[in-house]
Every structure is written in structure tokens, then in C-alpha cells.
Image 1 (cartoon, rainbow, N blue to C red):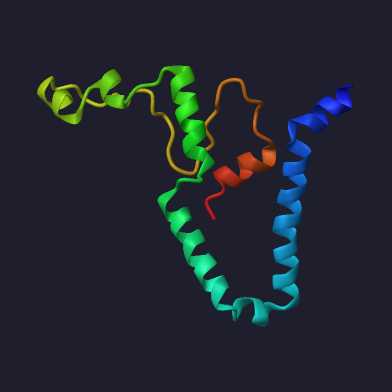
Image 2: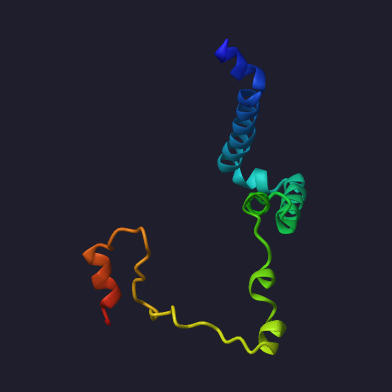
Length: 127
């Protein structure tokens, strides 16, 4: 019954179609590159794919960021620290008291193990 429940979800069918659908065209393109790239239909598909990629509608990072924002209740920086104009009017300077590192040096982060000696030598090497 458990195996049948997995089959009923349709995930296996989607996985098989995805694998066969993507691998088949990759094998054909690698076997016959001139014939594949010389096909005018390939150029149209390429342009459509580049357009979709450019608008970012398929970027999973956007979806994950929206979910993370909703779950975490995050807001824009202006809510927490104010806009640049508000900070300028209140004469709030930037807090640089917590910045004790310079470029090229390892920052000791909390909850992380001490860096290996090789990394320490690499960071402090001036040559």
C-alpha cells in the first residue's frame, strides 16, 4: 500500500519524463552538434529560453526568498534603521566600533571551529 501511494502521487512519472526529456536532447546534441545547432527551430527555442531566463520567472531563488521573508517576517532595511535621508536628519553615524578586521584576515565567527593552521598561514602570508 505504501508503494502504491508513492505511485499515485505522480512524482515518479514526472521524474521519468523530466530525465528522459532532458537527457535525450543532450545526447542528440552531443552526438550530432552541427545538425542540432543548424536547425532553425533550435534558434527559436534558444531565444525563448534566454527570454524566460532574462525575466527571471523560473528562478527558484525568488520563490525561496519570498517564502523565507513571509516565514521570518522580514521587512525592508528602512523599517529597522530608517532611510538615508532620515539618518542624515537625525545625524546618526555609522557604527564602526564592531569592525575589528581588515581585508585578508580571517574573521573568527561564533559557533565555528578554529581555522586550520594552513588557513592561518595563508591569511597572514604577505607574499
